[in-house]
Length: 395
Ligand SMILES: Cc1cc2nc3c(=O)[nH]c(=O)nc-3n(C[C@H](O)[C@H](O)[C@H](O)COP(=O)(O)OP(=O)(O)OC[C@H]3O[C@@H](n4cnc5c(N)ncnc54)[C@H](O)[C@@H]3O)c2cc1C
Image 1: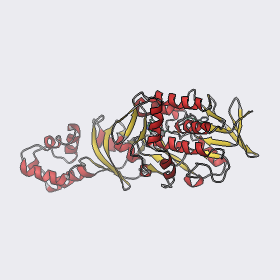
Image 2: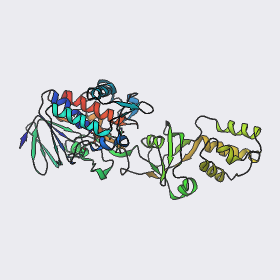
Image 3: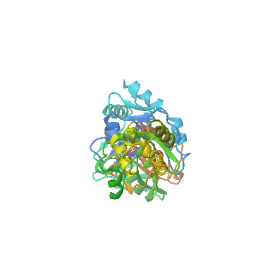
Image 4: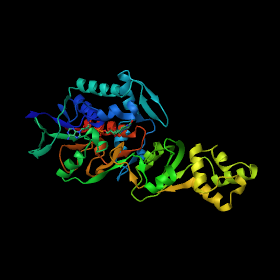
């Protein structure tokens, strides 16, 4: 039996940050990680460069059944705190777009920094230790792996969500929450490509795979203006990944292919000024040529603009400013960047991330029903929630 003050399950972004903070406060901390090394999702994040935070982080960048819950942690641990930590380790960053910060020294440098901080704070990290069972008796948790038992008054569940199961991701946190009577919101794939029926694929996307263009994608009253990518299976790219988090089965999606223009006005003007110009040729000024060709086929017009009937013009303008499609589903957890859902925020303190009705039990990071938009917001939540729990443990 290994006795310690805090057991943290999961050496990901949230678990490591929590361990550092609790260790710095003099607590004996043991982190149990089932993988053979810590921080595996950090290592693959941001194309290997880790989009570690977003300068424009606000609570509005997060989805949750309780949208107020993330406010406290995000206010107490901001992107500048993490940037300060990186600077102290000699790490620099580059802002790509929209406030997204990437590590110049690449993702392994972020993991190395966290591990260095853990070592300085006296944190013990045990890899290859999958937690299988948790007991609670006499105010102490007993955490069981195949090889050892760990006993502590404080238990932090930082096991993330089930996205990318081939990396070993599971919904372990939900079984722990249920074991202690805490309500959970079922996990669902988020920041995930959308797929379409064979019929829609044949009609809209066949031969267009690889095309990318800036669009505004809207669903359920939410819109994102970013790039969209056509794939063999349907649609992806930042605009689609963002909107996928708000999409539910059966919901239609609206895609504005000309977000900077009123398509009807533009078409009318073009018809008056260049009546002999072919529609496909004109459309290719605004859209990738293969997509322009496909839209001409769909509205059955290949000829000059002067042949465009009022009905065809209305249909085409509608398509250009509000292409409406209903996805048949998502690519699922297999490719989802995050899992939405998690432990119901109403079960936790927003200040400490501690369970309200179970002493010494904490949930942090993706395990909690707080899901960020694309662009570094998920790591910011992991750092902030881990930091807050780290300040509160053992008090
Ligand atoms: C491909 C990809 C790219 C991404 N890129 C970005 C990005 O650039 N920016 C961004 O903000 N977000 C990104 N994300 C999302 C981000 O990685 C997650 O939101 C973040 O890692 C969540 O941190 P966490 O600590 O809560 O969980 P995780 O990082 O998932 O850590 C959980 C840990 O718990 C361990 N574990 C699970 N069950 C057990 C168990 N029973 N016993 C012991 N250990 C266990 C797991 O092995 C894992 O190491 C990306 C995600 C993916 C999949």
